[in-house]
Length: 138
Image (cartoon, rainbow, N blue to C red):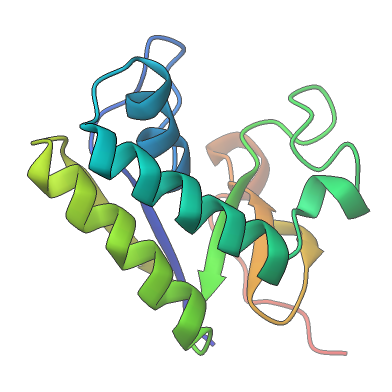
């Protein structure tokens, strides 16, 4: 299994690399989208909320910085429909000239939440995990 993350190419003021959904919503909230793009983001978000689970509604502290520092969402590579939806957000970011990047890995970190289309993982840290050891088999 490969996990994919679509995120900002540069960190925000807090040093965090927001995902593409947060980036598009940030553009919308700042009033930087055209009315057409703003409506499109609203529809995409509504579809996503109807179709996919928000991990924080299942595991309230999955993004809590004290409990799971740096936790971030990753798509499963076989979540085709969700990835296609996310790529629409990247097209919007491209039109707005907002840089983003794609990360791919088989080991996104310590997984704290998972469902059929996504995981939330806390990134590995040098002190705690280096050198990286092979994953344990059950």
